[in-house]
Length: 330
Image (cartoon, rainbow, N blue to C red):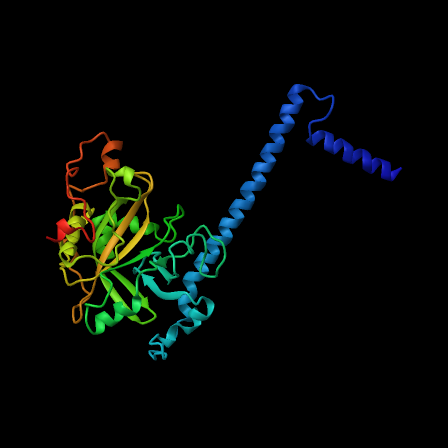
C-alpha cells in the first residue's frame, strides 16, 4: 500500500510539472513556460557560479605577487631569482604589470601565439577573464638590456593585451585614460620583468578599429614591433592626433614604447582602446609634470565613429600610417 501511494504521488507530481494527455491548451502552455523558466534559472545559476569561480581565480592570481622574493640574484639564464616561485606555477610567466592604485596589477605571460590566454587564466584553467599577455613577437631580454646598455637592440614597441570586462576587471580601467584627471593620478606604468624592472611614462590613449571596414579599408598597426626609423616620428604624430589627452611628456625617435591594448565597443563595433607609454630614459627621473596635460579638443577617430554620429571625417584623406611604408620613410 505504501509503495502504491509513493507511485501515485510521483505520477501526480510528474503530471503537475509536465504536459500530459488530457491537459487543456492553457495548461500545456503554463507547464511549458514553467519548465522553460526553471531551466533558465538553472542555466543562469550555473553561469554565475562559473563567473564567480573564474573571477575568484583571477583575483587569486593577482595576489601571487606575495610569492615574489626580495632576491636580486640572477640565474644562469640572466633571469631574476625572485620570480622562481611564480615560474614554478606557470613557466610562461614573464613579468608583472602595475599601474599604481588601479586594478591593473597583474602577472603577465607570453607564449608563441596571441590566442592561448584569451580564455585561459594564470593557472591554466578556462576563464572568460583570460590573463594579460605579451605579444609573442616581443623579446623582453633585449628591452631590459637596452635600458642598461644601448637602445638599438630593443623592440621599438612592446605590446600587452588584456580583456575589458564588464565587472571592471583585467584592463577595463585603461578606458579611464580618456580623462585628464585620471591620467594625472596615473601617469606612470611599471613593468617588472623577469630580467629587470622598467618604468614608462604615458604619452597617449586612443580608440582604434580592429577591422578595416570601420576605417575606409585601413587598420592602424599600433602593435608593430619595429618600423623604419623615419616612420617612428610620423607614428608619434599619429598618436598626438588620435589621443584623448595630450600629456606633454616629451618623446622622440630614440625612445621605445609600451602599448597596452584592450577592447572598447562603446563607440564602434570591435573597437580597441590603446594606451601608449614611453620608457623612462636612463638617468631620467620618473616624475611627470602632470599639470601640463590637457584634453584633445580635435580627436582623430576611425571612420566608423563619424558614420555612427552622422559627421564628416576631417581626417579622411590623411596618409595611412604603416611601419614600413616607403613613402613615409622618404
